[in-house]
Image (cartoon, rainbow, N blue to C red; front, side, top):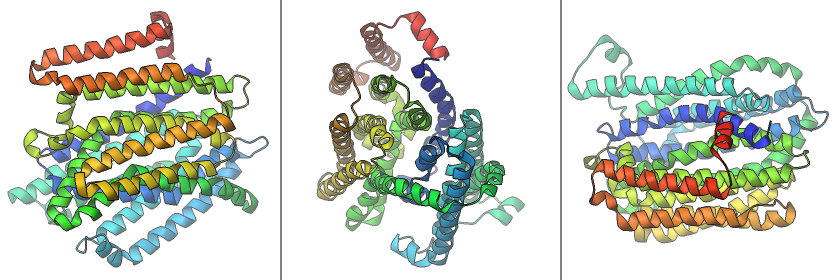
Length: 503
């Protein structure tokens, strides 16, 4: 099969699983529409920012290390899996034990002195998810995309089910003064947003239970030399991953700490507004996650082919095209998509201006993510550290400098500048170290057109002058013309497109 079609097919299957995560994100309007005010959503936003860091810390690059060492000539994939699984289980169990033991001082430091249970819940969630990540990496390596999708879908459905039970039944019953034997036995008054965390905990336990049968491969034992080699490869990825998480989530943490002198309630409200509007970029985030799941093993397995670099270049061009189409879909139709985060009276719409900024930040991140394969294939992962540390430095400096002046707008602009800087530096260095014949002219053309269309839409703001139907008709026509221009430029006919989509 054409390698692009193969990658598209794999990405398509993973997209089903990733889109199943979209069901999870449909909880966002559920939270925002009357169940949690921005101040409470701010707690949710902050806690999951810490989770992102901890998951990277506890997996310490072993997912990518597994792909690297399991795919080497003469390697034994099951022995590699066994060695890395023993490692990740040991560190995760140690982390859970320490976090539970020190939960009181940690909760005080987080400024949640009355909710030390948050620390225990999240320690278990993060530890179990770290262990699950290696099981899921094994499924990806063996191209068991359907099982991967099934496990993640089941996990999400359990999470959604318990969210609805806890919020619609327990919390609403508490508000209305209703009681039953289920409420008396299981409901904890005042838990509030904590029920989101409990639902996540139950789902994480359920996910690991579906994956645990693969633990039989642990019989292959622990190879000390293999483990050392894997750590030598993965630890630079850990540093890069932590710096990457700083770029992605540190803004939410800094918002709280820098704005705290303005008052607890106001700070958490602003954090909640920023977090909710950031979620509007969910389409791009899900696509990039699906692409990463499919592309990493694909790149490693395809590197020995004579036309590998030409294929990598084609992938980059089409990734940018898809990202541009996603940006236009959301930003041009923002007056419709804004209902994703509630109604005007819920208080979240005042942050809609950051949505285009965040979405273009994700485009830059997608370019960096796709280009970063050069230092992974070259086994020069220390470059990943340099680029992400650069981004982390930009994130910290711009947030600390600008948050006192423009509040959450600072975080949005810092995110965009961070990812653009990382993408530019990675491509500049990568083209000298591991040349890939990217079509910079075409990529620049499509990206430039996308930016101009977004700026024009913001400037014209036609949603104020026409009804919803006409508004959607005009904007969808613009998007279709953009796609038509791309197909003509790339000389792709309808039969080619149909064949590609079928794959």
